[in-house]
Length: 320
Image 1: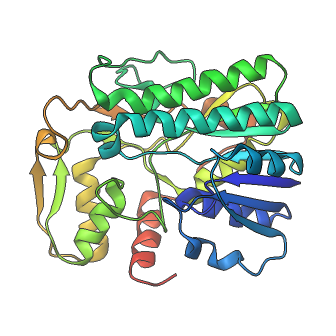
Image 2: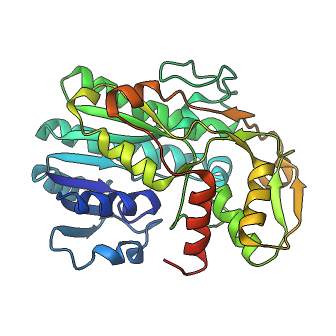
């Protein structure tokens, strides 16, 4: 197939591009490099079936030309990061909704299959676990910026399903805490790279909150496998949880990173308000029900947390 990957120079996107090329597809990567990095595509830069376009999904003219030549688009381009969500909600809202509308409108005009990368954040703070794809969304007040990313991605999903009702082949994949090589650490970054960077330099590992909150961390290869499986016609018009169903507390994750790195880092607890300001809200648990992904997509995560963390640590040490 001829495939477009938006955000293809990013963490998950670059792994997706590599896998698509390895399985015989011709791939166009569209990335404005605001988060993505050209060196993430180093392994495919000489591949004659790969084409990097440095531009944005906000550029409708460029996006239209690309979609006119493609059979499918994996839409991963997004604005994310908890700190962004708290500090700059307009950036989150506009950066996610406007680009997704462009992709879906132009895909509909050209009858291009869309696989939209969403997030487990859409479930909010629902305490009824595990999350099924039809679970209720439970959110805080609109005055709490924490929930704007969840709301923006949920609206993106509504747009996806509205176009599905009009006949567009579209599938939503909801990622659960993907981690792995190329997930870089920053003040907007995720917990796994933040812990690894601290551990490798024997600095304090800061666990936000009391550390008892738990998540299901998914190695990027498993995330990519589930994403590509969503090309199936049987997936059209549906949403799928893509993740691991094995939970771990954030404190135990920190201990695991210390063990695997052989670090002398001390683990310290830091109140949420010290990092994100007063009024920050979080959910205690986030676990997916994978029944639909398993039965329809044949999805089965295969990389253990121990193995995945070791691979990620090796990448940070320069072993890749």
